[in-house]
Amino acid sequence: MKSELMDMVFLSEKRKNLLLFLKSGPKNIDEIKETLQVSSTSILPQIKKLKEQKLVLQEDKTYELAPIGKVLVEKMEPIVSTLELFEENFEYWAERDLCGIPPELRKRLWELGKCKLIRPDLERMFEFDPEFMDNLNRADHIFESIAYFHPALITLCRDIANKGVEISLLVAEPVLQRCIDDYREDLLHFLSRENVTLFLYSGELRIASLTVTDDSMNLSLFSRKRHFDGESLVSYDSSSLKWGMELFKHLLKNAEQITEIPEGTPDKVPAENSGFDS
Image 1 (cartoon, one colour):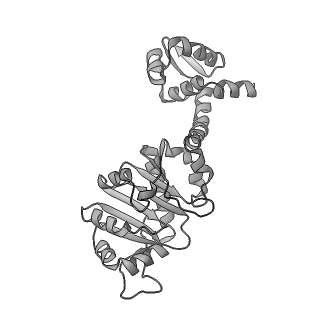
Image 2 (cartoon, one colour):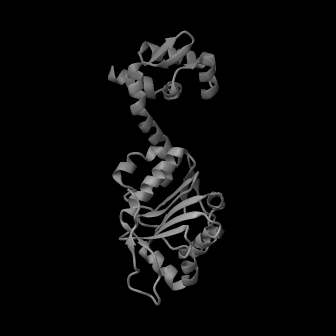
Image 3 (tube, helix red, strand yellow):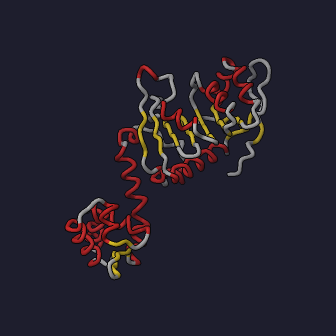
């Protein structure tokens, strides 16, 4: 029975999709056909098999999950969604260092949902991606963590902050030091804004970059050899925004807020506790 039930669920794309679709509640055949883009002749035999296995119940002209079907779908959704996440951009995930993501969030990678892989053009390696810029320009709130230095970072953040956007920026120590050395005036202007909070990460920041806005989540991971190629994943699913904010708050646990930039080039930048709730 174990093998038969597993085959019933996973060996048919139509049955798998139908079970996941019925998770939201009873559906009639027209709703099933329209959402799953199937014909009656193709889906009715699959419904019959699921009914025979006691996974789906029929009440008049509607279909719904049976009690054991509900339990099964609740457990299968993370597995199916994780497989789909990896399959969509398999080469990217296979080569990435996931150690910067805490275990509890690694288990929930499926919450990233539908992700689009952004690859920078070689001639634009030192420019921010246009879609990424669009996401920032329409945001009211931005939560950004970055472990590598980008020459346009502080200027970009300064300009966005000048529009009144709330920005929480978390940077690795080498990034902050480079900004102090080469972009001091821009950094001071940025830090003087009331709508800006700057954090310094303590130790090695193993997430290349993370950006969460009102409606987007952008994640860039280092390769397993600690190389950075500028590639990133963007998602607009609401679950990815929640996941991204949890990751940002996790990073804040090992960060301190920067309130001022001293004169000269200090060995250590003054800092205080972040004050963020975990």
